[in-house]
Image (cartoon, rainbow, N blue to C red; front, side, top):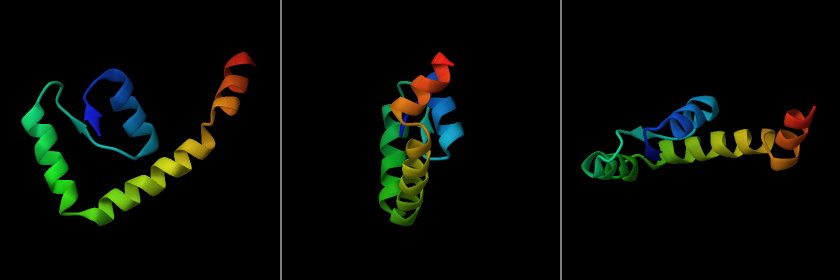
Length: 68
């Protein structure tokens, strides 16, 4: 979970693993955290997507793509 900025919005969209809240909106962040606390299955599913995404985008692979 993170505040809405170009990097985080793009990473969440690409990975399908995360939540975006409006920049600087602490109450929105707290509300999202509370909602996730009531829905642990969605957190578990997002964690699985994040792990899969991370395995495809490890440092060595990303570096090799950028240097090609």
